[in-house]
Every structure is written in C-alpha cells, then in structure tokens.
Image 1 (cartoon, rainbow, N blue to C red):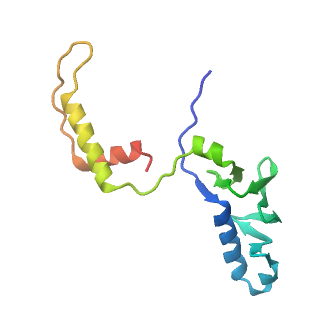
Image 2: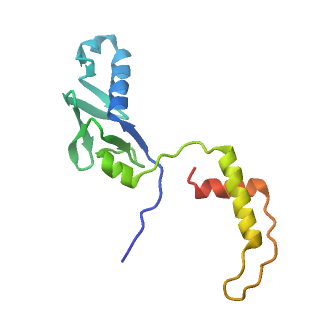
Image 3: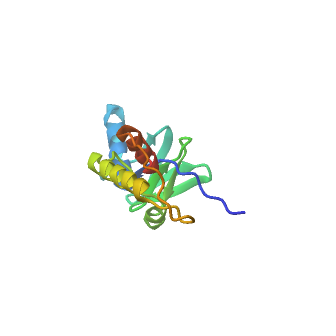
Length: 150
C-alpha cells in the first residue's frame, strides 16, 4: 500500500535562533545570568521542553524517541502536537518548504491564470469547449490560498 503524508505546517528554527531564545529566557531571570557561558545559554526551556548545552555546537533536546543532539546547521522542528525534534539541513531542504504570507500580486496572478485556463480548456475526449465558468475573485483567492497551503 502506498500512502502520502498529509501536508501540515510546522514551526522550524535554526541553532542560532534557539540560542537567542535561550539567552532571552535567561535574561528574564537575573538569578540565572550565571548560566550563560561563552555567550551560550547552559540550560533553558523551549516550548516547555528542557534544553541542555552539550558544547558550543550542540544542545541536547528531548524528543519522543529520547534525547537527541541538535547541532549547528540543523533545524529544530516543533510538530503538530508540540513535540520537538532536530533535523539535518539536507533532509530539511528535501522535505520542507518555507511558507509565509502570500504576496497579493502572486495570488491575483494565479487567480487570473486559473480563470483563463478554466474558460479556455477543452474536453480531452470530445474536443468541445465547456461553458465559461464564472469565477468570483474572492472565492478564487481563497481556493488559491488553500492550494498554496497559506
């Protein structure tokens, strides 16, 4: 049986972003300032998970599979249920794409292209042109956003 993974949007941060988060967390509590060594936070929490410094290029993160190394150059993913896990950059680049706010001009262009295609397509079996499809801009924009997963 072949299956396809459902598309979901997850959060990903870099090693440097995790360090910045840890420094910000420690900065909030003056008693913990001594836990910063060589500019690196020693231990802190990220999304409710304890993060521990192993060396200046590696943190230990708790995952569902046990403690794993999160190294410089990797990404740290927060899954759909709040779980965290490190992923190598090469695997991240092959598996994920960055999503963000859509460019309104991009959405409009896609809407126009889809509307044009729907009005000028031909039935492959009969060769006939289907009746024109009235497309309301706002409806088409919402469809395009869903298709783009944005």
